[in-house]
Image 1 (spheres, helix red, strand yellow):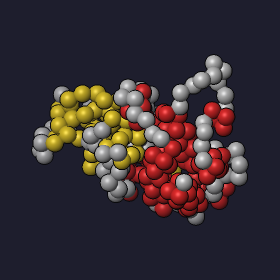
Image 2 (cartoon, rainbow, N blue to C red):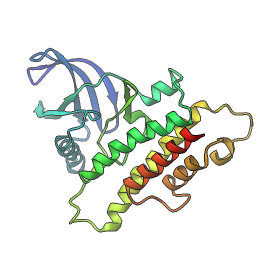
Image 3 (tube, rainbow, N blue to C red):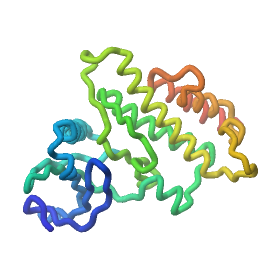
Length: 242
């Protein structure tokens, strides 16, 4: 099947309730690209269509080597599509569960530092991802690539109350905390039959515990990405000294 007289579909590489992702060959450029299609069942819904258009608007604004680049949007046979870069790499979920990739504490913090850089870039553009999970992160040359902006929100900071903006920031921060826990647990071997809280199961430096507790809102939550970055640098510095 060829879409828009140009993109030859090679495989379906992702499906969700909202969209279908195709790996295609761009016949004009002779290179792999990715096309996202809004599901037929969703295209009659104004809300779903608006969400699809919102994802397109967000990707059009972004220009970062660790985020797929938007190419174009088109319609065909009543379906709506958009085209973006294909970035080679498996998602973090596959790396951890299929390839058994592990991260020690320092590697986990360095990985979080890379993610914080990406989230900082988004927040500087008044964009909030809102869905930072292991299936939405690809690994390429040990670098995290952030994908799937289907639930992302872009705001005009003059339009929204500060509380709403802070809530969206903290959702991204909470997701970063969950991500950090996931990668820290890759080197954990359970000795107890009974599951315990991470504070008891993981043996971590106090600086790492502090970051996790604030990200996961156990202690006073962060209100700005720069605070996270400063704590991370301090934690990494203290690891070098030990």
